[in-house]
Image 1: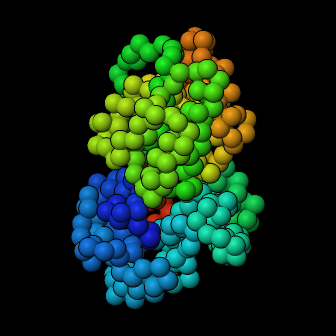
Image 2: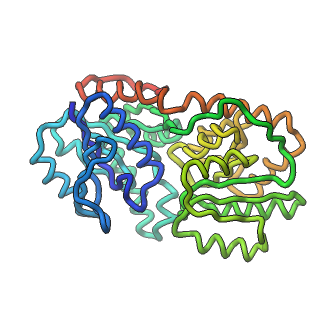
Image 3: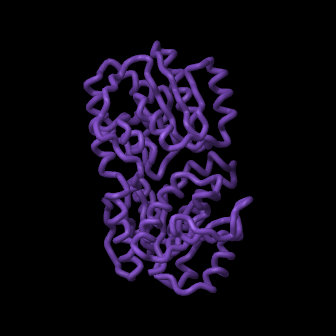
Length: 373
């Protein structure tokens, strides 16, 4: 079979993130099953027009506002595809109206308030409005997404057929949990792209709130991005000194070492498709403390695998963390539950069923919404 993924970014794009990591895993698994797989994406400075990554043919052409038209022109010169995957990132590719074959839509999250973090009015309002209209236009197109919150948002926008395929992780869960009592100084970690919608400034403010309430804690921030300078300035203004450490981007093994050493992963994003770093931390025996937003309230189960704050404020997150200090039995219960759940989210469990779903759609089989795993 021949598969085509349409996505604004590919794994080598400087702005690539979790969406591209999971997309690569799905497509590479289809290659391993013997299928021909293509990924059409935007150009970026220094990029090759075509290359192969993990057996996937990467085709780059156009940018914002032009890549759809270049994709159509390229597509019309190709042999027929069995399935086109139209991945939405704020804007769709509108493939169901030009691909002339089986088509599914792929969405990580309904952006909603994320529009407000990158654009001012009236563009932010226009973005929210076009989301609703685009989803209504796609209402009869099968979708897949990673969590129930995104499914519910799509249903509110009239989409009728939505399957949930969880994100997997390549991180191998620790074979046995090491000893890690929750004691002061509390070791906190963030692993994230440093972008406005990730609200890493709320994690730094959470550290300050803990300090102001007498808790000794340290925060290590792994990642890079456009808000790095502002975050460093925030740490200076809050007089956090050596309590905050910025590592920049790290190799996976170094990132895992930080996650394994931490008592808690903090995640305060506006919303997520799922929260890959939560499960990666769980694989390393570390629960998460997160905001009550789409994606994060599914990747962290409150009072089972970690903590979900009552509100989207640093003070509310600090309240949850303080309640855990001194209750090591509860902390160890979270560690075990998070670790056991993370074992079921390795790609080896998810990809076979996900590929079955893709192949069924490529054969033109209709199916009721389902959940994988």
